Length: 122
Image (tube, rainbow, N blue to C red; front, side, top):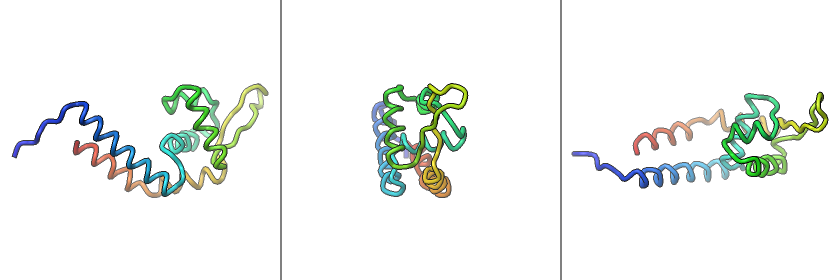
């Protein structure tokens, strides 16, 4: 049987739905959205980042990155510290709660692997 070729826009729709479903699972399991999860992942690798670095890492505008940071701060996952060399600079780092959250996500990679496999099937 021949595999039916989908229109590119339909493929994007299907991928978007899978990612949206994944984000819903992430929200219900860990209490974070996809952007917050990506923020935690980025901070776990870099230790401290400026908001500009975070925006670049997440592929967000400065305004949207700020919203993600504030949301993570309110949840106690990220903390804001003043730069040592430049007191005007704000740096962000994971709190112990944020580290625990990202470890929970990392320790259960099965859902991410399943998502990637499902995307490959499209």
